[in-house]
Amino acid sequence: MLLELRAENYAVIDHAIASFGPGLNLLTGETGAGKSILVDALALLMGSKASSDVVRHGADKAVVSCVFESTPGAEATLEANGIDADGDEIILRREILENGKARVYVNNQPATVAVLRQLAPELALVHAQSETMGAFDQLQQRQLLDRFAGLSTDSVAAAHAAWRALQARLEDLERDEQDRLRMVDLWSFQHREIEGIKPEAGEDEALETERRVLANAEKLYAASMSAYDLLYDGAGSAEATLRSALKQVEELARYDAKFEESRQQLASTLAVVEDVGATVRDYAEGIQSSPERLAEIEDRLAALGRLKRKYGTTLADVIAHGEEVAQKLAEIENRDEILKTLRADLDRAAQAYREAAQALHAEREAAAKKLEKLAEAQINDLAMKVRFAIGVLADEKPASWTAYGWDTVECRIATNAGEPLKPLDEIASGGEMSRVLLALKVSVEEGAAKGKKKLQMPRTLVFDEIDIGIGGRAAEAVGQKLKALSRAQQVLCVTHLPQIASFANQHFLIEKQEKQGRTRTSVRLLTDNERTEEVARMLSGAKLTETSIKHAEQMLKTSR
Image (cartoon, rainbow, N blue to C red; front, side, top):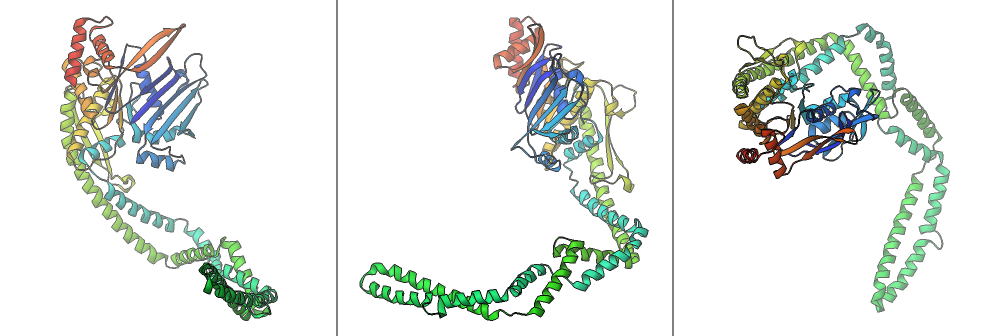
């Protein structure tokens, strides 16, 4: 959900802040006040093209920013682009400089417009007068159809991943065969060298410890035997002294209980001294001064060091490299057999994908027939007379296989009798496009609400000038559809019609005022009384009348 939108020195806006809520957020105001400018500002934050023309006269840069609630998909996009998440919110900011250059920040970290475009499908779908941000592209149309029918592409995605992995391995094996053959001598040498030494993981560390012991055998023997004498065997050893002291404390404890704890502590200390003495004695007895073994260890460590310098920083890396080289040699030696096996596996994976994609195609075709009927009825409720169809075109060539199937979903419409059906993005009127999108979205949400599965879609939908060319009952129908759509997703809408404005959950007024010789646009959330007055103004014009106020009150009451 969009929580906040800010604009500074943007077009006629000096400084404006709007805090949005769930449900239907409507923006109204006089013509030219800057309502569509706010929608264009949000479109910029979704990745639309920027121009220095938006910088307010006299300012060095325009700044637009917004705060969205985060989603798992948006967080995954941030992680993929090396951007840290910022709690439960995502902050987008874009600066457009007077010289035409621009800067993008996501969660106050430098980013690119490409990142904004990746985030857009997760956060908002903006249908502005100037540009439709992803509203009618092939991806969105397929997602709408899948959401309507509650279709999952998981099985197709899994089959596609398996097929693609086998295909990539086969291509790698077949590619640059001459180069691979030229590498055989090198791989053979490396394999013989590693296999000849037969390193074991961690072996070098154990040998280093043993080498240190052998190189310092005399010092270690002298130190351990000296420690043994001091602790246990020598005259006046710690063991003898402690044992004498323990006898005296035991005598004290017989007559005074407060020495019992001291007796236990001395007994424990004596046991520790005896254990340490036995340990150093056994260590001394085990020390063997063997120049032959020392030389053998040093030779082995030198051989292992050569392997690590060539093939990896650790013996584990060396062993892994040896296994990789052995596999490459085996692939070349058994190339024909491996290719035969891979091609058979690839054929089976391709067949599995075809079956999954064909099943998904059949489900989409059935869903398309249902959705096109619902959508056509919804569109014709909005002062339009259209024919509407949804085509699901299967391209079964492997080049067209994707993790979402092989289908292209295309919505087509004829806005006038006798005209052929055309793709949605070819219809001329921006207002008609907005209304078609609204009707399509309402149809999808109604269908998704009846299904068991709901697929993630943008949670904020933005419509600009959706009411162009309509009025009366059609306007009320648009308001009702916007209200219905806003129960599932946050909706922002710019409107000039009181019939639509009366359905708002939050009503914002865009005002343009002249101060100190400069025009400034502001945004404010209306109270209930102010909202009544604004709807009345939309009914009667600049001059409010008692009749228009009563009419506005009735419209607001009815819409609730």
